[in-house]
Length: 118
Image (cartoon, rainbow, N blue to C red; front, side, top):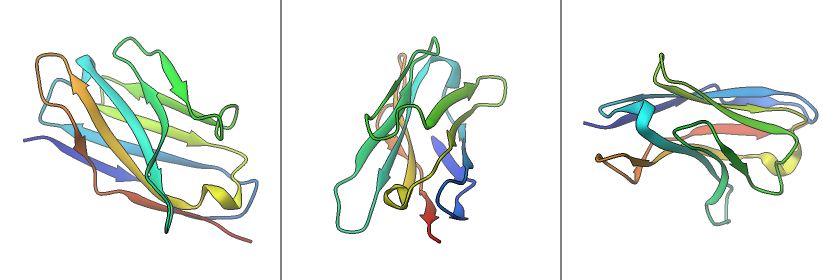
């Protein structure tokens, strides 16, 4: 079955950096479109970044130039490098399998908490 396990969250000061990881299993990772979302308390879940099978990427305007999504198909892992973190980046960050060619779609990880605070 599909499993997505996030790690790397934590407490960081404004201006700091974190790298989130999402280890995937149960599907053909190399043929998948993967994404990171976030949800802050009292707010709707929002798309942060996505990466295609070929490595094309897209970002929310609020994180462009600060966050980088990447993937390692040999490790079945998608990453989110977050730099220049701001207070408003505080949220639970969730990994999502958007779609795998000929396979499953719409699976979520359990999330990892990122707190930006001084």
